[in-house]
Length: 266
Figure (cartoon, helix red, strand yellow):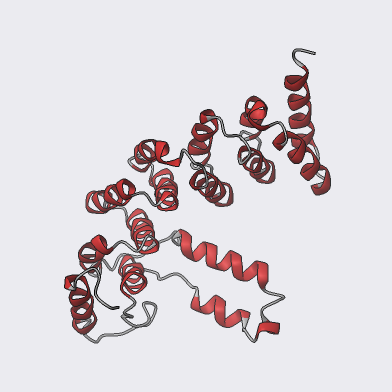
């Protein structure tokens, strides 16, 4: 009787990892989630499972684990090789009451020599949205030279609405290097369009047009332009368009916006 819960959680975790039936997977996920933090030991092992749907189920279980150890497991899961798992881990971390305790751990990941791990940690920091995370991302943007990492940092600062980032983002308009990994916000947009595709025509929306509008810019500068538009509400034009005209007019409006008082009417 003393070890009943431990035995049951291990059995449910074993069955969850073995089944290929989505209904059975949901059942075992619910059983484990109902035990709260008692499922931590079994759930940690599920995050090493080769199938991403099992690792996603483990993150659902961790949502119901208030123990501080669950926070550390989520931080590790942010480095998962599958973007869906990594994104869900970042979201679950941001939903926790102790999320601020993870800022330092994510900053260490974002300073990794692996750009792929660093990009995922940047997404996690953006999800947390803490002031110290914003300051760290601004510093990391100045330090890194990897174009994909820079693009993800810019994307994160844009989503955070970082007023402080505007001068640095204007400087990034000179970075015309190509990126090979679309920033997270564009990946999320396409996932949302795909999941709602059958419902969009009834709302008068064209899925193809939405997909076209959500195509990620192909350069660091293009990502910076979109981030500046998100932060300021001032569009610099289509960042995917081929154009030769001077961008000084848009840059001037962005600089003027940044110089305006914080409480000014936007």
